[in-house]
Amino acid sequence: MIEIKNLSKNFPGRDVLRDLSCRIEDGDTFSVIGPSGTGKSTFIKCIMRLLKPDSGRILVDGEDIAALDDEFEIARIRRNFGYLFQEGALFDSLTVFENVSFGLRYLTDIPREDYGRIVADKLALVGLEKVEHLKPAELSVGMKKRVALARAVAAGPKCILYDEPTTGLDPVTTEMVTDLIVSASEKLKVTSILVTHDVNLALRISTQVAMLDKGVFAAVEPPDRFVKSENPAIKEFLEISNAGHNGCGDHGGRPGHAGYKGPGGRNGRH
Ligand SMILES: Nc1ncnc2c1ncn2[C@@H]1O[C@H](COP(=O)(O)OP(=O)(O)O)[C@@H](O)[C@H]1O
Ligand SMILES: [Mg+2]
Image (cartoon, rainbow, N blue to C red; front, top):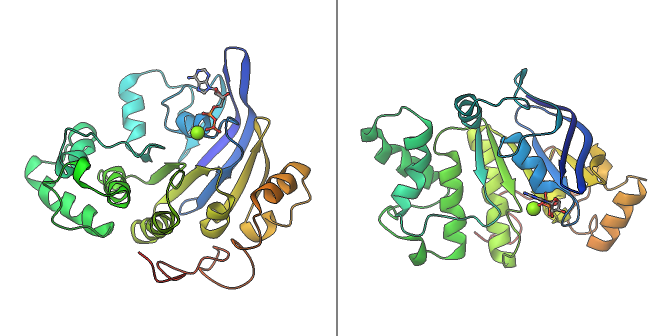
């Protein structure tokens, strides 16, 4: 369980997160939406302690990680998290095997002889096999995303953080990545935190949706309630995004995940 209390983070001349609080339960898919430049990436980087908050608390299973300074302690905390960067960045000079096993080497004491099995397992989880020897340049955009997710989950994190997982992707690949996030959440029973300006993605797969507005969460609601919010910032953002019409509704789908049709369920695409 992750509980955030009065989190603030400023950059010179700019207050980004201001006294922000929320509670993310184990197994939740918690989405933060909001326009570009509102501090979504900053939020995720504070949780992973890639950035140090100015004030406030970030309780991970009761332990406050916000104020930690010791690199060793921070590295220990980071093992809880798998992080899918906005750019999805794989190491271009490394093979798929080396990319996926990267975190095993740096974050765990797992013996090297087990890497082969673990890498194959994680690749299977994302629907890939026998690609260990390939270099990123030989992969399609969708395959790169799959490999990046396999890498993010290789060391067995309790929580996966996604930063704009579908930004810049074509609709088919967006659908595939959406399925991938849901399937990772279900198969690995992890907590997922995703930040995105794609409202429809958030509404389709989340248990909780939070709107980041002026440094705080304007609302934290399940998707079905979120779309009915009377909060002006949320209404405006939903209108601009034309959301709530095609992304969410009472038309079934994954329990607790309004409107989600299940992996491949929309058009049978993968
Ligand atoms: N390392 C940094 N140094 C200074 N300003 C930053 C830094 N990172 C982000 N910012 C600023 O903080 C604000 C929020 O950035 P970010 O969290 O990346 O927003 P989002 O992910 O919602 O687009 C932006 O105005 C950005 O320019
Ligand atoms: Mg960002």
